[in-house]
Image (cartoon, rainbow, N blue to C red):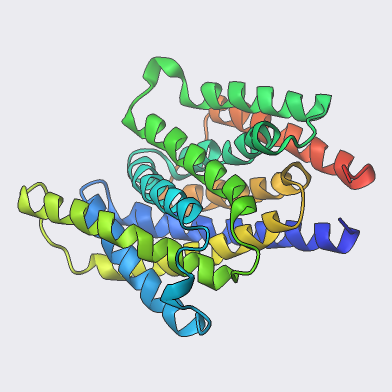
Length: 288
């Protein structure tokens, strides 16, 4: 792994996480009453439509290549989006994002378990501190569905990032993202139909706008993740993902009048600071 490769991966993750926060804002604006599965279905359809013109090399014959991993990632993506919408519409923007940033810590843990990537004492400290920091932010005595959903979203993102390593090397990033969207379509359509037919939510065509904005921005984020984690060790770049928390705090304060409390600041510091130290340490002494 060269220094240029490492720097490129870090820049990709910084930009990707900034775009992901803007996507979060679009979801939060929808409100807690928005039909979740309708939003997910519309976003998946629009995502596939946006990707189609760019996937010139896509063929249905190539679909079986890595199908099992693609299917698992599609299911994780669907559950992750559901959890993310619930978390963003019930928790403050910064609080939800702080928990989402547990994902880089889980990536280190899963990469160690699944790929035998080396965990140093500093890495272990970051994992432990991040887990405790998450509890400080969520305050278990006030634990609710929003907090549980935020944790579910972080888990989904981490597993998805690690599974990138198992995707076929010959498939382009656009190809992989399109397959993910196509495999999400059937289940999201079924869940949307159940939501609509049971009368739990009215059809809201205006959600298409939110779905398009969110879908395009998350596509850009997923693209940066695919590129960043494919060629570098997970524990070498995950620290770059914390930068989105800064934007979440600023936008939450300016747009939604959300003022971070002491427990949030303390917990966020416990998540972010060890990752920052880990990043500087690995820049000085690269793992490979």
